[in-house]
Image 1 (spheres, rainbow, N blue to C red):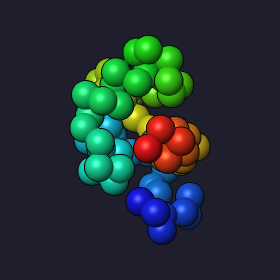
Image 2: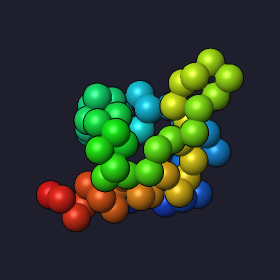
Image 3: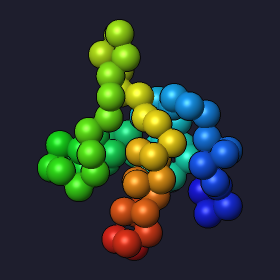
Image 4: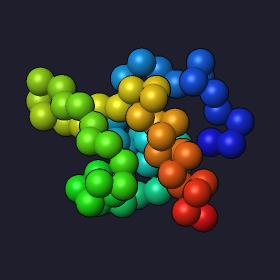
Length: 67
């Protein structure tokens, strides 16, 4: 994820894809949302979390600040 830019990220991405990109688990991302460390993801018509480019960059920045 270090070399990833906003241009490389599709418009919508699932929590599983974000987890793979960041090396985190989907449960960790969901927990961070629940406790307010990162903003809540939008939901699609199925109720699945979907992330935009800005959300992914926020997760990346938070991850870098923690570790």
